[in-house]
Length: 379
Ligand SMILES: Cc1ncc(COP(=O)(O)O)c(C=O)c1O
Image (cartoon, rainbow, N blue to C red):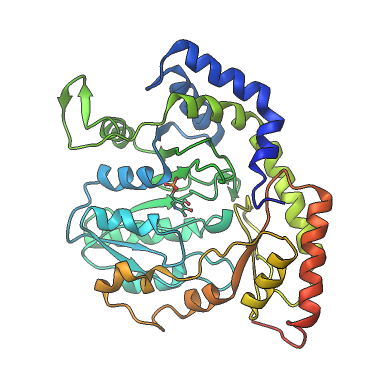
C-alpha cells in the first residue's frame, strides 16, 4: 500500500493524461501555452472567482501574494506555527517577520481568539492555513482584519494558505476564494496534484491580479519592459494540461475521499485515538487524515511493521525550528501546537485506496490500540 496511491490514480486517467501531454509536445508551447490559460479559466470557474493566476508552486503562490502587497523588512505577518515551513518561509524571504499564534485544539487551525493580541501597527497581513483540508475560521479572521485595518489606518490583508484545502467548502463557498487572496499547491500528493510542481493564487482585486501576472514573469508588463522586480515562477504548460484532466474528476475524487474518511471515523471512534473534528459549517478534503495518540511513536512503529504507511504532519511546530531561533520563541509559547505535534500522525488517504487497504489500516490500528493505548483517553 502507498500513502497516496498516485500510481493507481495515474493508471485510471492514463489515456487522457498521455493524450494531453502529447498534445503539448506536439504544440511545442512549453511555456505559457494555451493550456495554462484554459486551466486558469477552468479553476476560476470552479472556485467562482474572477481571477486565478497559476504559478510554479504553492510556495511561489504565497511569495507572489506577499510581493503583490509590497511586504518589506519590518512588516509583520501573523500566521500559525502548525503548518508546512513554506507558509512562514516566504515571509522571511521578504525580510518581514512571522508572528506566530497558537492553534485550536480541535481543528488544528489558527486560534482566532488569540490573533487580536498580536496585531500591531506593523501588521500587514494574516495567513491562516486551512490545514489538512479544513478551512480556518475565515469569516472571523476577515472581520478582525477589516476592524483593525480601519482602526490602524492600514489595510490588513488576509491570505488563505489553501495548499491543502482546495475543494473544501466553507459556508457554501470554496476554500481559496474566502479572503483577499488564496494560495493553492498542486504538489503531486495534494488533493489536486500535477506531475511536478505547480501552484495558483485566487485574487479578488483586479489590480493585484494584474500585478501578480506581471510578477510571475520577471515583473514584466510587456516584453522586456519591467515594472516590478519579479522572478520566474510560471506553471509549465505540461502541468496545466495534466491539471485540466484531473480537475474534471476532482469532485468525484473528493466524494471518495469523504466516504473513506467516514469509514475511518466510524471504524476507529472507539480505538483510543483522537479523530479529526470537522466544524459543521464547512467540509474537509482530507489532504491528510490525521489522528492523535499519546503513544504515537509506538503506534507508528507497529503500523509500519504491518506495512501500513504512516507520516507525521508535523512533528515540530515552526516556532521551535532552528531556522526561527532568531525570533526567540521558547518551548511552552504555543502549548496547543506543541502538544498536537507530539501526538499527531497521518494514515493513508487517497481516492484510490481500496476497501481492503482501508480495512488493513483500520484493523492494524484496532490491534495496536487494544494493547498500547488501553486505559488511556486523551483530551
Ligand atoms: C500548508 C502548505 N503551504 C504551502 C505549501 C507549499 O506548496 P508547494 O510544495 O507546492 O510549494 C504546502 C506544501 O506542502 C503546504 O502544505
